[in-house]
Length: 100
Image (cartoon, rainbow, N blue to C red; front, top):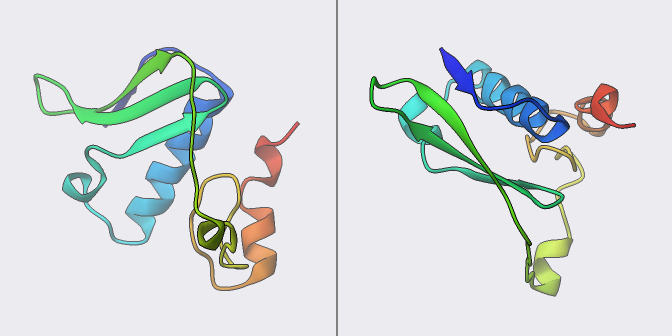
């Protein structure tokens, strides 16, 4: 279902996020046009010419400006992929195996 160009830690995180989003009942239509940033890697979910969900990758310089209010993350949200969980424990275990 998901075609991924290249393979990187960032792509692994995106694939995990996609899987968890599907498990939470989200549809492909809801995921299209989502953009991810991992280091200087920019990934964007698109639907290719044959209608398959695909991760488009670009490498470049990334600058993110955030408000101070945005820094107060939900404690039940995974800090790596942003998926909200039912407990803090689930959130910290979410992408634990992805970290080096």
